[in-house]
Image (cartoon, rainbow, N blue to C red; front, side, top):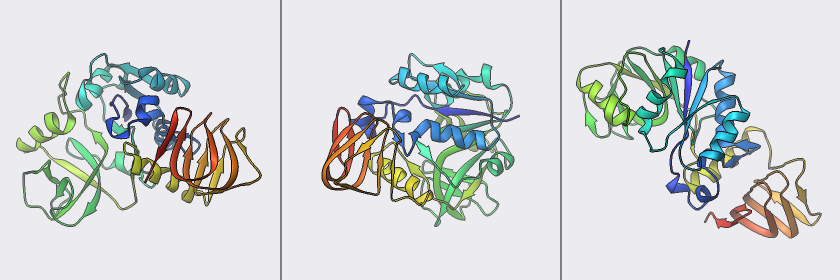
Length: 287
C-alpha cells in the first residue's frame, strides 16, 4: 500500500517575513493551514499512512501534525528531500511513497490516478508545456528525459515539476541528500525509467508571497465565494470585503473596502486596505 510523506522542514526563505512568524506549512490558506489542505487531499485519495518532517519552527508543524494524526520525523539538521523520506522509512514502510511538498497546493490533481500510474522507479506530476520549457523534459512515451538542464534522451515536450511525485521501492535513498539531484539524476544517467504524470490544472506555490496570495484567491474561486469569514471573526458594519479571507478571531474595523487581503487568525485590520497579508505581527503589502 502506498504511504505519503509531506516535506515540511524547509526554511521558507522566499516567504519571509511570514515564515519568521509561522512555519511555511502553517500559514493559513482559506479555512485551514496550507499543510492541512494538503492532508485533506491525501486523505481524500485514500492515503492513511502519512508522515511529515520538521525543522524550521518545528513546533508549528508538530502541533498541526499531531492534531491530524500524522507521524512526525524531526530533523535537527536539514536532511534534504531524499534524507527526509529516508528518515521516515521505518514508519512509511518499504512500498511506494507519495512525496508531497507542503508548500504546493494542486486542488485539481487526481492523486489516485497519480499513485496508480507508477511505472519504473518514480512518477513525477508535471504540468506540461512546450518543448524545452520548464524544468522537466518528457519524451514521446511519457518518460522523463530532462531534469535540471541535464538531458538523457530525445525530448518531445517540456513542463514544470510540481514537487509531487511517487517514489518506488527500488531506488536507494541517501541519509542526507536531494531526491532530484542525488537520486533521480543519477538514476536517469544509469538508464532507470522515470515517468511523468501530466497535469493540466493550476497549482500554487505558497512558498512565495505572490503564490500565497494566488492560493487564497483560488480557494475562494473554487467555492464560488468572493470572501470568507471565520465564524468567530468580527467584521464591522461599514466594511465591504472583496476577494479576501478573514481568519479565526480576527477583527476588521473601520469603513470602506478590504480587497484582496488575507487576514490571519487573531489579526486586526483597519479598512480601507487592499493587496496585503495582515498578521498579528504586522501587515505585509503584496504589491
